[in-house]
Amino acid sequence: MTSGSSQMTLRTDGLVKRFGDTTAVAGVSLAVEPGEFFAIVGPSGCGKTTTLRILAGLESPTAGEVELAGRDVTDRPPRDRETNLVFQDLVLFPHMTVAENVGYGLARDGVPEATRREQVEEMLETVGLSGFGDRDPASLSGGQRQRVALARALANEPSVLLLDEPLSSLDRTLRTEMRTELRRIQRDVGTTFLYVTHDQESALSMADRIAVMRDGRVVESGSPSTLYNRPRTAFVADFLGDANLLTATVQGRENGRVTVEAGGGRFDAAADTGVPDGSVTIVIRPEDLRPGGETLSGTVRSVSYKGAHEEYGVALDGGDSVRVRTRADGDVTVGATVGLDVLDASLVTEANTEDGE
Image (tube, rainbow, N blue to C red; front, side, top):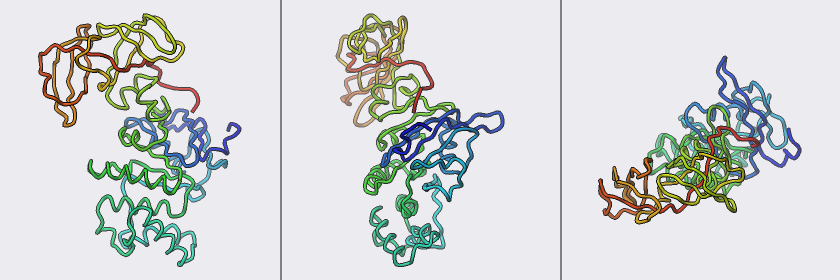
C-alpha cells in the first residue's frame, strides 16, 4: 500500500477476482475518506457486487489488498472487520421486535442490557422510528423496514457501512423519499458509507464521490457534478444520464476549450489538455440544447411529454440525431424545422480505464 493510507477509512489496491476463466474484478483500486458517502455504480455484471463482497470479507480476492482504517484486512473474516452490510433483500428477524432487531449485534457483542437499550433508542430516533421499538417488523411498511435494517447495521458503529442496492425493491416515490433520508442519516451519524447500485439517479443524488465500473474495472471516479458535466469517457457520459454523443472535428484550441464542427454546426466545447488531432467525440446533454438558436438545425422526428418538460428527437441537417429536453410548452410538433444553440458541451475519449483511484 502507498504511504499515507492510514488517512483513508477504506483503501483497496489492485483487487482482482477470478471465477475459473472469468475475471469479475480486474484491478480495482479505491480510496474512501472518513465520513464520505462513496458510491460504486455500473451495469449488471460489471463487478461492483463482487467488489463489495470482497470488502465485506464474503469473498477472498485472487490478488490485491483491502485496508480498513490503516489495517490490512484482506484475509480477515467478516466478524474481524469494522464493517456492516445492508443487503438488497432486507433480512429482519420475524420473531424479534424492532428494538430486538436493532440491538441484535450489540447483544451478540456482549453490550449490557441497559446500555444496549439506550443505544437502540438513540438509533431508532436517528432513523425516524422513535417509539417503534415494540412493533412487529411484519407490521411495518417497506420504508420503515429499510430504516430498521439501517439502524441495526449502524448500532455497533462500524467504520464503514456497505450497502448493496438497499432501495431497489421500493417503489419510485418511496425510493426518492428514502434517498433523502439515507443521506440525512449518513450526515447525522458521520459513518462512512459505501453504496453499490446500478441506479445512476440514486448515486448522483446521494454520493460525495462516485466510481463507475465497467468490465471489472473502474472507468472513472469523481464528484457527481464532474462525472455528469465533464465526463472523460463516452461510456460514463452515456451511463450517467442521457447523452448526445457527436463525432466532431477540432478547428481550434484555446484556454481549455476547443472549437469543433459537429452536427452541421460550429461551437465551443470544454476540453482537457492533450486534445487529439482529427476526429473527437463531443457530449451534449439534452438539457444543454436550447430551441430557437442558430448553431444547429434539423427536423423534429418525435415529441414526448414528460410532465415538467418535453423531450424530442431531432434529425440534424448534418446527419446526426440528438435529443432535446426543454420546458413543456406544446409548441414543438413532429415534422417542424427547429434551430438549436449549444449551451454546454465537452470533449470525451473512448478510454475504458483510468489510472489511479
